[in-house]
Length: 213
Image (cartoon, rainbow, N blue to C red; front, side, top):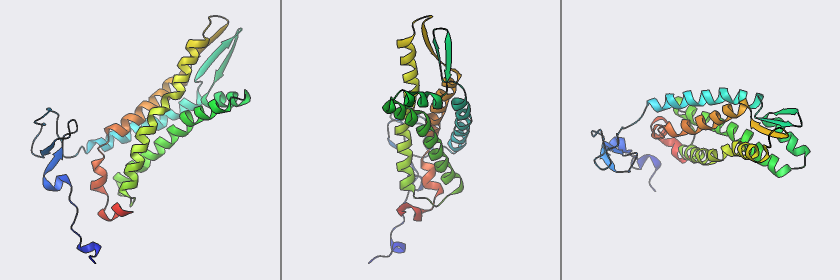
């Protein structure tokens, strides 16, 4: 039986002087600056994407604080105004026995953003400090983060629908609070942080033995 040390070393595209077009997926020589098929700019690796992703992620983590502290919705009914944060809005739904909606809002507004930020942090730390974590598991987690992040806007969608439906002038009025802007920026920045990162850096920075973890 062939031992692992006798197996041929896996090579990446950069080892063969090849790179992939990010737009049309055509395989090109690394010496080319633009794709011959679609004209997109080519780069063997975008090393600056790591710094960009860190900056966006840190900004999103900072904005998560005002997004949870300040009111996200402002209701005015019969001259009385109520300011609801994300948490108080969820507890209010629980008090009204609307548990399914409360669970959905908790998942989309609190759980998902925190998990996204934690997941991206682990991913970036693994690249920056060459943590011995399986590349395959990291890539699966990264794709899950990208997919589930699309549902994070559910809370803002509910707020916009509520404001459009219940807004009845002086008797009943609903509008988004200042935290809505911060929350929207958190979702946007985490999505962009995942998009701008060149995931090929993961395969360069970690050791080959971590592939099978």
